[in-house]
Amino acid sequence: MTRKDEKPAFQQDVHNFRAFAILGVVGAHALHNFYWPADSYTFVILDTLFNQSTIWFAFIAGYLFQHLSVMYSTQSYYLKKLKNVFLPYLVCSIPALVASMTFYEQAMPAGFYELPSASQAFLFIVTGKHLAPFWYIPMIMVIFLLAPVLIALDHRPVFYLALPPLLLLSAFLGRDGLLMYLELSPYFGQLSKAVYLLSPYMLGMFISRFYTQSMALVGRCWIPLGLMAALFFVLEVLNYHLTPYYIFLFKVLSAPVILYFLDRQFGVAQRLVNNIAVFSFGIFFLHGYFLSGTKILVTFLSDFDGKFPGNIVAYTFFTVAIVLASLLAITVVRRIVGRQSRYLIGC
Image 1 (cartoon, one colour):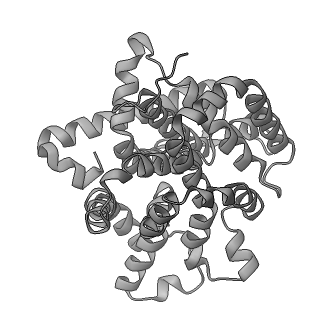
Image 2 (cartoon, one colour):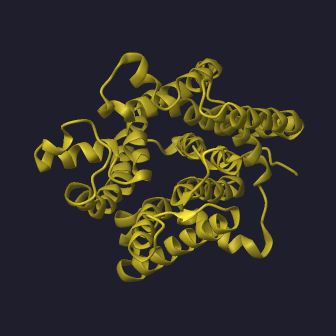
Image 3 (cartoon, helix red, strand yellow):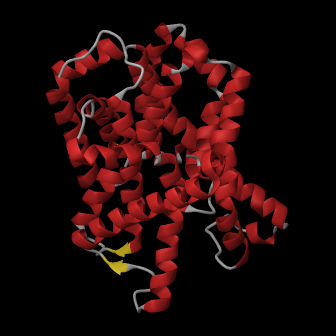
């Protein structure tokens, strides 16, 4: 695999990684549409493989942030994030907010549903608790607020020396470590998650800033890096959800290796990969509705109480169906509203 001395304007590796990451996100959430035996190693292996694929999303976001930093303007940056991220988040939240505030109660702190409706809506928006995937948006908005600081740090590369301890801190904290250790209210969950995902975001920035050197190093060392990632994968399977969170180390170590090997075309499948990558943000916003809708439909039409019996074949077909249904919905919306779809569904 050859690498140019400078990053090309269009980067095939990052483009393909977007598709890879969103498939991981959908795969993680689709697992919970099935019943799995309590001692199921199939579930644990699949969950370790796909869960927390948002670490890869944070890595890609950090990479693109640094990659585009030459055009950075604080005011323009914040306006774009409000229009392209927060606005579609609000629009896509409406059905979930209505459901969560009327007939489908979510797991919220005690006393939540005694609050006024406006307060409930606000707290749902800042926590993302109204639809399973939506926690990521208020979390990434916290990191977006740090953009001027991160730009300043990127201009002084010595600060990247802080990455190893920050990555280890994330591995020991986990998503909710800040809440536990500081005994914060659950409403501060997105702040804890932002601390957790800041280090992979910064790792993406680092890889982008030193792209040629990083990819050359990965090209020489992908075997030991891959073996270390595999080791952490196995350790997570054997020590499921225990501290330190080996799943974090698995995802972080695998990210540059995956990036390296995705710098290629996938033949006849590349068109589908392109669509998944281009519409990844729309898939993110919509797939949760198809998953929740399927649970409701199955509850009414069968005795499965919203979930199917778990097996690898059914799970694989179901996950593919959710991705294709999301792509179809995106196509319909885009044909109706054209380019304005970016402000409605994120793409």
